[in-house]
Length: 117
Image (cartoon, rainbow, N blue to C red):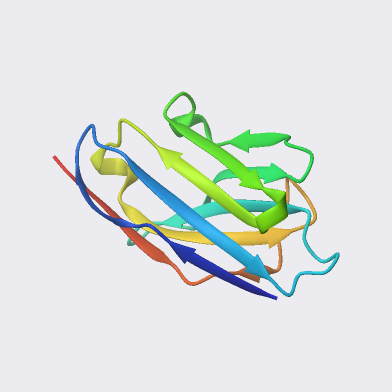
């Protein structure tokens, strides 16, 4: 299983970014894909996750600003991040597994998101 993430970058406060993560070699290993983030000195935390049926879960701090979606045909998950804040700055990691409430065992490489004030 490989998860290939892309789309990070530097943006001003209030701006937008979209992250993408393409999964390959998954077979039946993954039905939930999500995004976690980790800022320096902080633990890695769930940002958002989505099942192949479209059920979603978000951390409270991003509700109303971030939207997770997926294209099952392409095995790709997206994270649209709007109204970004400096506290959203972190390395974002794509994750794949089988539970909406537990971290999956598969990780992509991190992509840096930096929001300037």
